[in-house]
Image 1 (cartoon, rainbow, N blue to C red):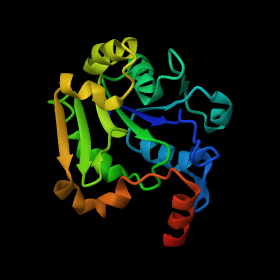
Image 2: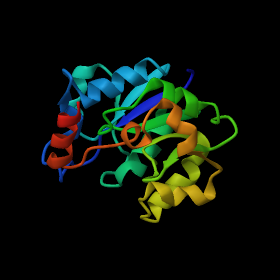
Image 3: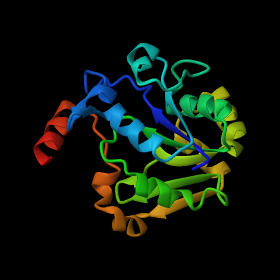
Length: 193
């Protein structure tokens, strides 16, 4: 697709106590899996991170935040500014089960909406969503006000919430959009595979 895909890898992984993007499952790191899915889906792919040393080996451009310690919203701002395309898909690096068919399904609303986000019983998945460059002014405004939550921009944007019943055709939404934050969650996930 003529869009940009970004893996967000800027978190501290404090609860996991090691870099979540480098956890291995089925012979590849979560970062490798994410990049593989995005590279098969998008014309351009970035990694959003301030820790370039971990990711240079992947041969993908690494985009640092303009200002440090602003969370994922800072990553959205930096990548939307440098992306070659108007529409950018962002995914967190700690989502083991992202799928190209889900990403393609969500893309169908990107022309009419500023944001396209999956919404399941566990909530909105702000870090597995499409953002249009039109969101940049409100993102920049919120960052200047020290409002760092990604969802803080939603009220000022035209949003398409893609509901769980629309997404079940691709599998269990809890698994599709699940992420890992703790060693216990990671151990549980290993037992399931």
